[in-house]
Length: 357
Image (cartoon, rainbow, N blue to C red; front, top):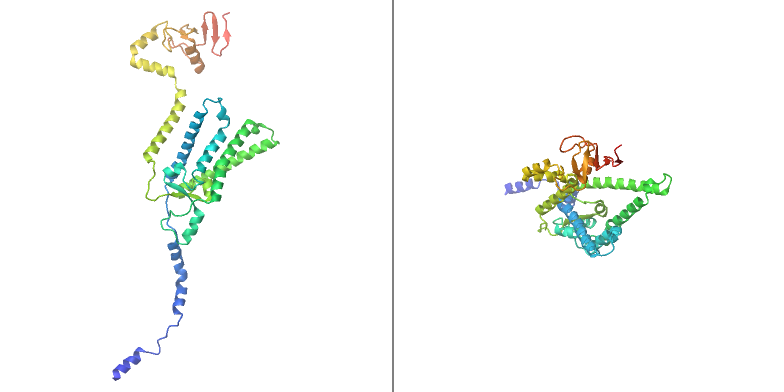
């Protein structure tokens, strides 16, 4: 009995302090500053990476669609006055871009290029409010563009491009750059050039930032806070990478051919091909005196003789060779041609007529 009383007295030692009623509040206040970064991390919305190639391809598809619509519209007016649509090309482009904007962005739908890439515009300002309220789970939520953003997009992308094209055409037609330095047109032309340089520099900086972060492919989108996000997370892009790569290769190949073909000498190319497939016949024709050494036709068109060797060529063949190469040598005897004549009339390489003295 005495041992039990002794143990109870020891368990209730008067030296142990009793916790106060607000002890838990004081403990929470002491550790709250260290828990604040963790709380902000948990409330931070998930980061969503939108493929940059999808955004660039969407813009390219929109441009191609506008070009297709323009081509069809030009065919409609093909029987009208020639050059009618050429004078109103800026208005035509603005009208087509306005139609695309009216039936896509204005009604909260993606543009055709964005739809093929499974993208849509999102108001990033409203999304930030939802993220702070903890209403974001996947990072793809958020409302579309507001009415102000839609109208601003139309004014900047449609009206801005149209106004800039018209202003450039006006300055080029009236030759503002060639006017006096003190005139208003020269000052306006200088302002246009300066503004264009600043805009190009800003576009380059925006491109670098876009490649780094994957947000806002243009300056207009960055100013309006209109970001492209996936419309449906479980859906892939409708246009495969193989198709876009094939289109890119064919486009660049056609550009290369348009650049290289005018530089080729088709007569020499034809001569090489004819010699490759019928070398014996070509050599026989080249040795005949009544055949043109360049085109190898036996019926020479407007025959002219070279000076001083006197071999016969077609006028067009000889003239084009002499213009292209002032030190042209005869294809038969390798003598430098200094002039050409028909009958008793001589024509120098510069095109002036010379008669024998």
